[in-house]
Length: 253
Ligand SMILES: [Zn+2]
Image 1 (cartoon, rainbow, N blue to C red):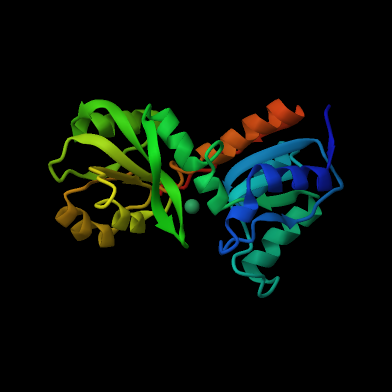
Image 2: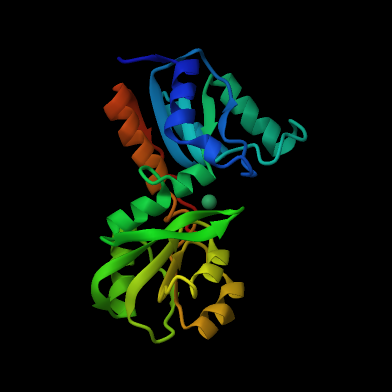
């Protein structure tokens, strides 16, 4: 079984995932909890929570890479839910590594680049400013399609049932921001987007989108954010020969 030192793996990931591109991320990106010194199996998950930690334990994972980590904006106290979660990780010697905005944005492994790829959209540029930097992408369909046809493609690919609002435009230029990315709608008019795809449904986006005549597709926070960690897993297997496993723990939201 291939093994790697924890420090070496962390340094590799920090650089490969370009963590330094997002110094203002609320998430403390990188190693959040230190488990054992050697890593033999990597788990990949969307959320840091008891459910994924228990599944990681069962699968003999000793390094868990997640999109939503445990520490946001600094640690205030190790008590309650946070205390229990950290105890589970330390008791099982599982290291926790978080990668938030860099993994939405990343051109090679990011949620949004991957969403374009799986939906067969040709990347045409960046889209969706967040904390002073665009974290999403825009892409084109081969030919204009109806909203019904586009949503069908999304639902089949992501295995979800999206909420959507059709404001009468044919679908050709699509802006994509995974997760809770609704505020990217502000970018849509200037960039000539006709359809905006994000994760969580947002009431606030409705009238903006209506007045801009931009169709809305909400496909779920979880469902739009499994692609990044999976792409990182593939890369780790290929480049470092490590055992990896995706830990699926959908919220349905
Ligand atoms: Zn998210």
